[in-house]
Structures are given as C-alpha cells and as structure tokens.
Image (tube, rainbow, N blue to C red; front, side, top):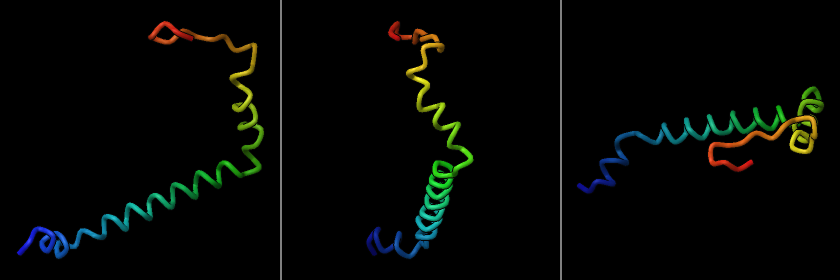
Amino acid sequence: MKLSDVVAHAGLSIYAEIALILFAIVFVAVVVRLWAPSHRAELEAQRLLPLDPDVPATKREGGTL
C-alpha cells in the first residue's frame, strides 16, 4: 500500500472543498463591497489620499518617507 492510497482513502478532500467555498464567499463579498454605490464616495476619498497636500507624510522606521 502506497502513501497516496492512504491519503486518498483518508477522506481529506472535504477540506479542499471547504477552502474553495470560503474563498468564493470572500471573493464575492469583496467584489460586492467594491462595486456597491454606497461606498463610492469613501473609495474616491481613499483613492485621492496619496495626492492630498493636507495629509502630512510620516517617516517610516527605515528612515524614508
């Protein structure tokens, strides 16, 4: 009996299916949140944040901006 036979008969394929379902749920949630019209103003403000002159740049631990 090979190791692949033991693993195949262990019934572990359910974990891969659960992981796929969780990924699909999270993916759909992210897409819905990004494309929801109610969040458009918030995302637009976040998109322009790096260009906003009123927000001061802070130094990182490495000493660079």
